[in-house]
Image 1 (cartoon, rainbow, N blue to C red):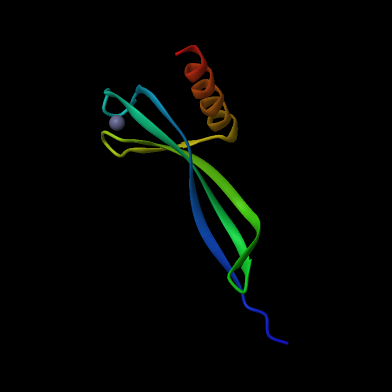
Image 2: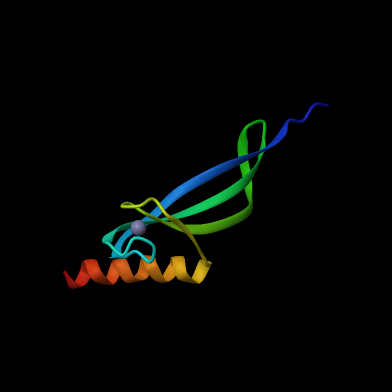
Length: 85
Ligand SMILES: [Zn+2]
């Protein structure tokens, strides 16, 4: 019996929100990503081992780690902005 296990790193773009970047001080689109490590069996993703969130500034490319709550708030905030606009 031969089993081929591995891990795969994936990044998913959750939402793009526009706010003033802490690092460059410019109001620019900030992309919120979810990064997850998945366990694979014969290259097929089975389940997520761990996941983390971060936001990346489109102006200076600074990446800032986010908590799950912060990422969720960002998605909800963007949804409300769309409805209002
Ligand atoms: Zn920036």
